[in-house]
Length: 168
Image (cartoon, rainbow, N blue to C red; front, side, top):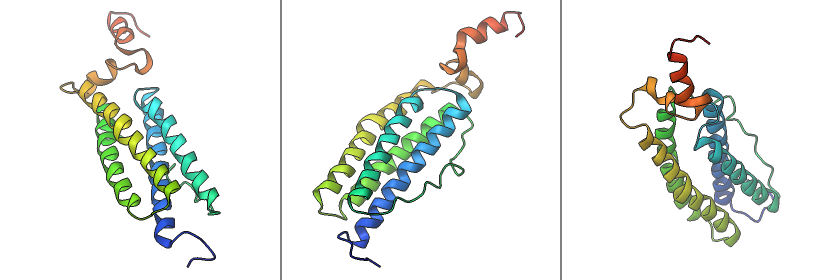
């Protein structure tokens, strides 16, 4: 299978798995933004995920590997609420951390380990905490109240004004 490649098949597979996971994250968070507007933490984290894709793409390039196509754009999961998306974000970041633990063990190459560790660190130290805060923000609220309390398209103030008798 390897054609004059300096990476093992396991290393190539690890790079593919990491890139596919980052593609999935970008597509998922883009979908949340399309469905609910520019809502945090998705509006911030999607940009970080794009940087993760670029870091992995540079690694593919460094080793002369063709960059696989992103097949997630039309397969991204859709959520009924921001709360559900945030809860899925918590699960996804926990799984992401475990994935990188497994992928780091596949290689001894310092540059690949560094990329994987950097991506894992961002996931576990930044993204996971942001999704946990997001989930906590919606604890105890009904799905109907959820969007009203968010920054989504004017938030609570505009909705309260609209309920005051004027039609829009």
